Length: 82
Length: 411
Image 1: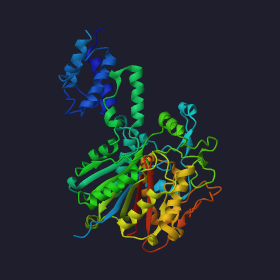
Image 2: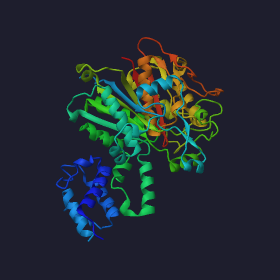
Image 3: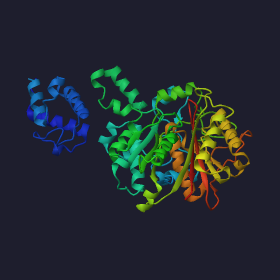
Image 4: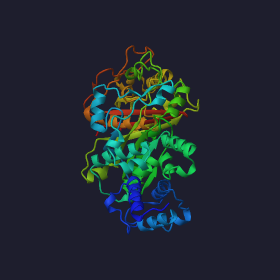
């Protein structure tokens, strides 16, 4: 199954809105989870688990460190779903 | 150096009879019961089908994202602390002189049980990463400490149903001992859930008056049959007297002393002689420099259990002697139910309001006063307290044989 970048971004926005309470319009590809969106390490675990469920992909713990921006996460999920 | 005095400069509460101090206090004076039948399905699976839930749900008082990261007990702590801090005038101070002491009897028990359900149904991967900060009993204190950036120390004494009073006493000592100038203190509880209720019911500690929930909490009534579980919390901002005066704070009253003791008798049953309670009252009076003659009001622990209410009343009569005749005794659990670790805290909030308004709240639901009750109970309607310098006691007792007595004095 392949996913488009736009689909993944839309889905990820919903997850981050739910987990971190951030307005959807402020969630863009270049935003840093920690410094821009204030998603702390515990909330990031929630985002990852919710993304795995939603997109049917595996995001291993050692990959999570590399997901610095929303764009990093979108690209990882798009690649993982190919 | 003269002894550092401690005053109350802010109050906050969320209780079964009101979402803040003002609404809770007026409901209390009006004799309103906060007890309701539970509508959850599980309620029919346990012997007790009612409890005293908070009057205003946290979802009406907090943002959704905060709610999902906080146990219900932590939500109560933040709601009441925000009210209390604002009431104190949101004081500016060196955060290294600001402390927090907030207790809970059981901690985040609903989080623990809900997450265990998720683990069993969906597996370890779906267990929330927020579980530990939500279930730890120091979570309410820690979250308030974080919000206020308190750096003098954040603490959580745990002594079952004496926890809330013990927290206030600990905060009182922090200021007296010059560790802090302001301490946000109190207690919270959020244990309305099938398991804790089934467990209290297994001890035969809860009232089973399922056909008349609002009449179930009846301290000192001949036909009382156990306590009613309540939830919520109360917070007091304690402040060093000179510090409060210097910033022009509104001062409600003084905390004049505390007395602590333990029964060494039984893990759950009260000592029928109440020797431990008597010692705590004596220590508290000695600590405060007051005598039995100064005490005009007691907000009693009186949970509506057959053994507890009488043991407490006898102990107070023994400790206060003939001076017990001029002590107006109020059992506000008749309206709020029993908030466990939050009880001593909301009752301390009520005492502060009692001293402010010079009005002792009523005890409701006494149809036949138990003839064994040896103290003067305020029934049905509030009672005016005398003018001049007056003082009042809060006593709280916890499973394990913990006894805490606090002395509040008009200023």
